[in-house]
Amino acid sequence: MGTANPRRTDEPVPVRCAGCRRILAWTDAVHPMRNKLYCTHWCMEEAAANPTEERLDQWRVLVNSGFSPVTIGKMYGVAHSQVYTALKK
Figure: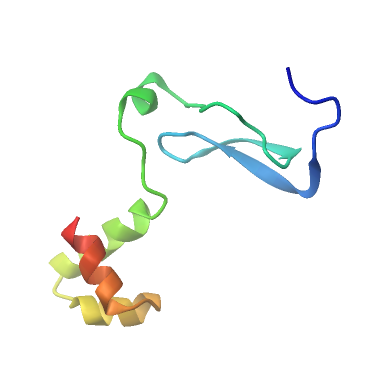
């Protein structure tokens, strides 16, 4: 089904779970997967994790600890408006 000569890269490319984004394997193909790959049935049934979910969790902890969004923005090198917008979701 694939091409006879798939495009390859010198750098390893991670193959990630479509749910939790955990690295499951490594390949040298430029586009390793056409279909979604899940590590468990649980990941397949749950909503997909946002790539910035870990950072957002850290921001929530900092806000609950008393830090202002302006301070968090300076700590992470992003605009404070981005912190405000992310925390509203």
